[in-house]
Length: 198
Image (tube, rainbow, N blue to C red; front, side, top):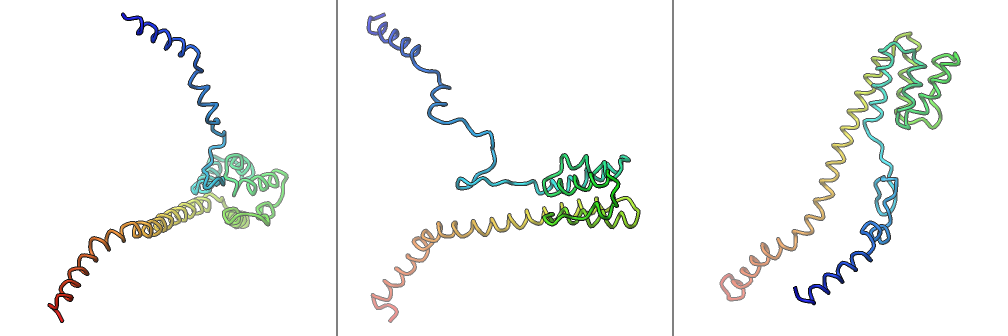
């Protein structure tokens, strides 16, 4: 083995021992990712809610009632895992029902209630007036929420298709003009200028 190879090997070993670890370099050059992994668009955080979360909350409420829980206790259980659109209304109704309030008053929607919470309150009040179980009404609300979420997803997909068509058209239009229209116009212009048509 030549002395140059030995010297190069020793220099490489010393460089590897003195070099910082890869993790240290990455952490120094690139900051660690934030704990919040919410989607961002142009630096602005967008909070997305699951469109089927409200329907799942209705289903969970109906399941608790089918299991034999009282309406107030079921509302309290569901409030812990319900989406924010329903959690406040469910928690308020559960507290009022546990204190012995009239169900019609307990299910009165608040001033800042979402449309999903207003629908839930209207159905619960109808059920309380009739003295029936709200299980069937909750199933209907869940089905309606799922259908509206599917319709909204289909509409968003159609809007995306229309939004993509414009830029794609702008990309392909110059090629269409250069390869499709220009040769025809040049061919016709040559015929006209040579006196073949006129």
